[in-house]
Amino acid sequence: EDKVVQSPLSLVVHEGDTVTLNCSYEVTNFRSLLWYKQEKKAPTFLFMLTSSGIEKKSGRLSSILDKKELSSILNITATQTGDSAIYLCAVRGWAGGTSYGKLTFGQGTILTVHP
Amino acid sequence: NAGVTQTPKFRVLKTGQSMTLLCAQDMNHEYMYWYRQDPGMGLRLIHYSVGEGTTAKGEVPDGYNVSRLKKQNFLLGLESAAPSQTSVYFCASSYSSRGNGHTEAFFGQGTRLTVV
Image (cartoon, rainbow over all chains, first blue to last red; front, top):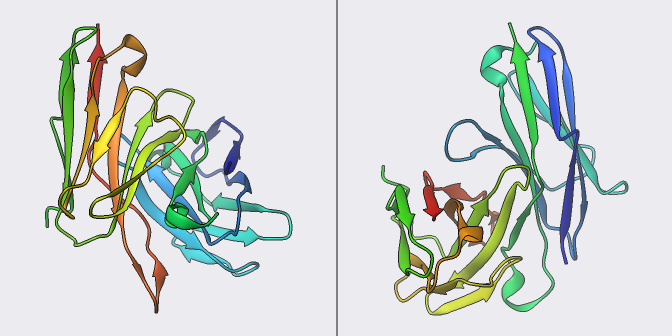
């Protein structure tokens, strides 16, 4: 059974702070790890990581995968109130047959950024 | 650009009633998923489909059934609703190609279901 654990579960910071969100996973035949941001409604895609050690970056957000440690981090620098959201981590593996494509999510980290 | 569309957006059911949630995608994606989201639990996979006519169970399939008769539609059914099925339901879709691997999942806007 695939498993994804995120930490911390919630985080409160002030504008301008830097935050690091963690994601650990157990999956058969790892294929990819994905990060999503969820505000009021549907999750929106941030990054997909498949290779260890290669940082993906988009503005103030960046993420990196460590396949040896079975983990990933999502960094947000110079946080703004608009970064307040639930951040979700998901992994895709393959245990054979129809499990290909199955995407398993963690519990999410609730980030609150105060002005 | 419709993407993934879920209907209805809100629904209140009485215990024991049945209903069907409809998910439609216009991106020609093979893979479709149904998740439920409860506070502190992230997204939990109910059922998924890797193509027209095929479905598979996820983490929390009990009390739900699904069908994928057409590639663009994925239906989630509750035969006899229970208060424990009060949740927000999300549908998603994705595709895979030989050259580029599997894409991210694209989500619908969610259905808020309350069972009283």
